[in-house]
Image (tube, rainbow, N blue to C red; front, side):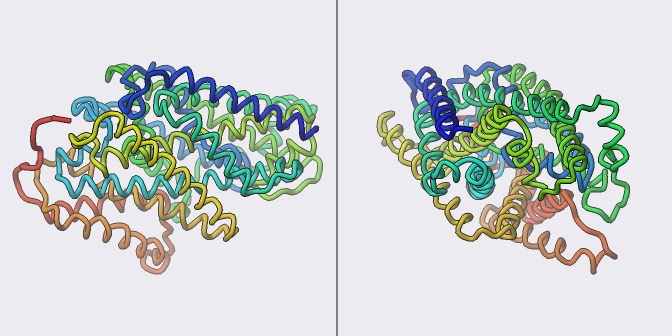
Length: 490
């Protein structure tokens, strides 16, 4: 395919995003950036959240995992589904009751200032690491399969990508993100469906034959029953539910768009609708993985799991399909990065700098500082991507994901304690609890085979982490709740 054509499509794609940004950011204020003026449409948020939840890593890695793990990933998806109901009917009512722009201010109202700062700090650490790893992995795929042929170096690809994200999120914030995520989710799902049917046509088989071959290759297995495995169905379902509760319900990026909807009822409709759609979309990604492996096996090809999808599309299907794949990959990348930078900017401005308390700053000064912070996070993202490329070590990436996952445990414990109990805590001891809980879980995880007769922790380590935090907070607490102060002033 002509490099000029690919470049033209990418430029057109970014131009559309910038046009949307210009339309949605007219007369934008800090309130527009942080909460969309509470005017977002619930169905747009629901549709756009698909793209945010299914990052570029999902776009590449979930299909590639089917050969080794079958459909075991869907156990996790079923857990996600359960977790969304907790988000909708436990967490969202709290956020609307307190009229929050940053969800971590609930911790301030309920547990005190130190707990509030640590909750926000853990989000900033976790989301920064997680988002930059996802950004690196997807840019790397684009670089290897497209941009190297265009003669564009990795550093320039990364810099241009971040520049585009800054341009279209700079002013409108969450209001712009709601619309751009909707567009990008559409392109991602279009690419997914087109790729499925294109590979099916290239096989020249009907669906029953394809499914029979997948069954014979043991790719349609759904339930893992070996309790010692990480992917045992109870670990996946229970872990998936808590992953959703923490990484959606306690995550400013995911909740910022939800609480930009005007009413609680509409926000709940958004979450429930989204949860049902996600069941279908994840099933399609697994089906895609099965078809890819059937196609590769029929032709005697072998690929590394993460290389299989882009390699087959590029090398063995019409070039027009590869172009659609590239658009889909970009569309999977941006919702997980643009929302992260916007949410991190919001959290830093509100929770760390205390914009809501700053009576010494007018709107213009707040906007100016917020824009500088937004650019600062973009620069940090760029530097971290360069670091991952320099290290080029998969173990480093795995470690970053582990660290990011562990940081949600204290958040789970803090919010659970604030919601379930009516006790007040000694805020000076909160940092000790929030550090010790992940450390204890890390030691247990890495010695579990010896300590528990071959047992391997899976996603339930998140629950254990949150439980240790909860227990630690209980030990430093007493009856009464003096921390819920000043009513609900924001």
